[in-house]
Amino acid sequence: MINLPIDELRQEDDFERNPVGTYWTPPIPVSIHELSPAVRAAISMAIGTGLEMGQFELHLSHAFDMETCAPMGTLVVASGEARDRACGVYSVSEVSAEEPMWFAFEQDIDLAFKVLYDRVRERGYLA
Image (cartoon, rainbow, N blue to C red; front, side, top):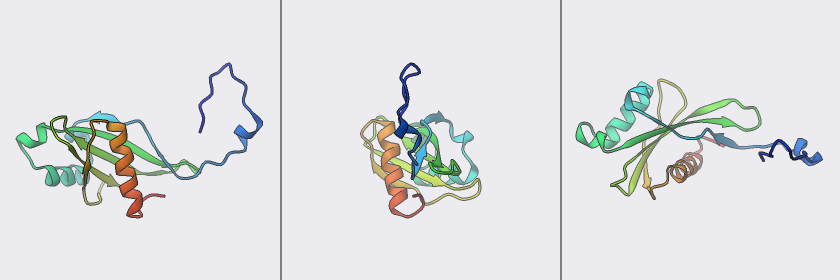
């Protein structure tokens, strides 16, 4: 969806668009304790505990269907500046999380969410 400045007039075709697919909210930093138990367990098992966990930053985003605005799940990325890999987890509910996915991390959290979304979509979890 295009965001137009408030002083710019809308065009007729702006109202006729029917967006389809999935969008996600801007990633926000979170602590491990703010994640659902299922996501926390998946991230902890993939990364490890103790000192290793402290070397990662966690970011969370919620996914929604563009057509209906229905919630589709949660995306979580664990990344570390000193590392060239990130771990991502997709979860549909508080009690379930898909298997963590590792991928290259290029020090850009927005790009990391795009990579995670592409992986989740390839596996058929999201449209």
